[in-house]
Length: 392
Length: 245
Image 1 (cartoon, chains in turn yellow, orange):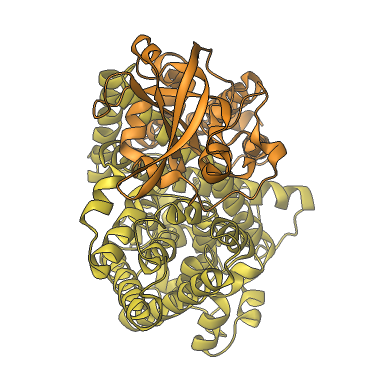
Image 2 (cartoon, each protein chain N blue to C red):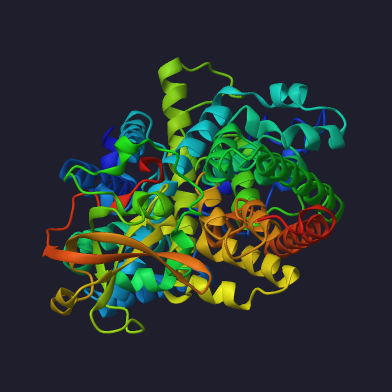
């Protein structure tokens, strides 16, 4: 039996517990033993998995593109966009990972269960406003949300926070106000639309993917399988020499802190690879697609809204900065189209898509995308024709 | 602690984290971070270096990765994580070393008039109008066209020899960055002078002349009738901040 197999078969008295108060039993998340979880570890067999092959091709493509375009204006634009997106996101991904790590080690599942509202709908409504307490952008929200789910927070509740958190928060609100010359109506519209879309999508996801059905086996569920000991580390369990809240022997504070940071490091490396992929594709879009062509074809309001939503996906802007870019379209596009850009962008773009796929299944991802896009589009179009037709 | 050094998995993981910390530390010390992000945001990069350091220290304090060889998947994932570091290294010299260029301008511009007076941000005082070289910020000019119409201005920017313009004309531009180069938006002005013939794409120039406002396709467009065009070195901070004007 390989080291990994030993780890997978390792069991712990804490596994599978914590089903109270809306918590999903950990057992539901457990992946079958034959599935390979994400890990920086020993290979299970000699066969090269599909994603390893795809990742290898991606690296090859990126290095070839670098060699082919080095020194050219196109290469400079693409490279600067690529590295910029990463550098901008990096501190926030790390911050989210750190918060997640601390949450993992210091907050017991029982506390999570106690704090969660008993009624799921109430949990979703509260979660969608958590950004007010924890004002971070979308890059920080994702790693933190992964840990929330692992701790037993219902997936739909996590989705509400995931989508609304980067919009309904003070920092993003301030940037929006600044970008729109202190127009409070624009700020209010953005917050309300962000909240409504997040809650609506979360409710739909709960209906379509009850429990943790949306989670990716080889990502979160695989991790949860490793969590049979409750730790969730990417490690070989025969070397597992530390304990958390659920372990019997209490550990000193420094050791628990180091464990929390280790968890954060694992999360950073895990989410980081998806961030790199998303940022790379986004930088190619930034280099290839001229923005004025979007304006040129956006005559009808419906087309303008749809195009600006598409632009939000390909530009991959931080929710703290997107209002400035949206408002630069004021002279040429209606406010509803700018709003579509500002509401969808923090919820969905190429780098976020890659990071979503690090922990939810492809089917759930497609559903999530369709729901987000549909809700934002219908809301914006309705808003345009009822209230905002003449506004820019 | 020795467990970490013995484990090839941990060594590989440590190498990735250390490479990132070194790359970020390097651009911070060399001041080259302004190529990628708005310069005042450097503390965020410093925070990243500190957190990376914490990751490395905690790896040594509480080793959790076992021995064994590194899987092919781990090699690939590690290579992916190192790609931005590789790209960063190549961007610090050559065409990219002075920031986004005229190619990016063509992709991001919404038209010459789109940045004028309607610029949504700003609100800075007149003291924000000039940069460290005593020249007028081109963003401030674009923002205050009506006020500055007919004034004598000195400003700096990069050159784009727009083929749609008549002979003796060119565009000078700067990018306004809120967070990073990915959200950069151009501000532009037309420069008219026989001396434009000596310029080429992506040169950095100082332009001195009279500002006029022309209307093109219904939009006010800044035009500088230049008395003098002087080549200058690329500034250390190639981008403008929306909070400067």
